[in-house]
Image (cartoon, rainbow, N blue to C red; front, side):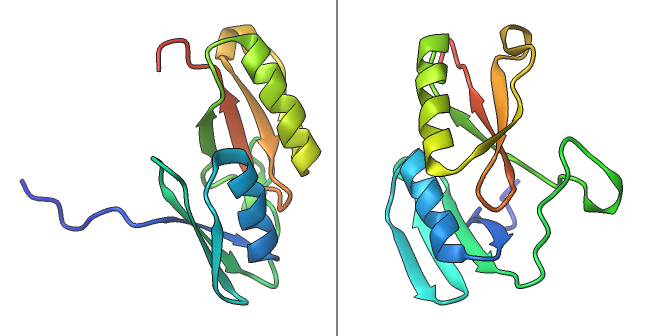
Length: 130
């Protein structure tokens, strides 16, 4: 069966589209392109297109889930095959403005959870066999 449409973008609402696009450009690559003050696009090399939309009343989702402001989605990033690579990625995302949400049980889960500067959750994943 033919698809109805082709995937275009993951769009993240946020208070400052250019700043958040810059954060994800530093994490995953690419160059943010501002179409206007309210919309910025990031084409990640060999990855998805992320877009950032200004939302003046934006509230970050609660982690892991809570009430009326529950997480709706999160982004996963392959940060390497070893814990040394994950630890290096951890230091880099913290330096970029991320904050840890869940660093527990990483040996069992093979991922660690963070919030980006606008509060969206994302994971650094250990992928042993990419």
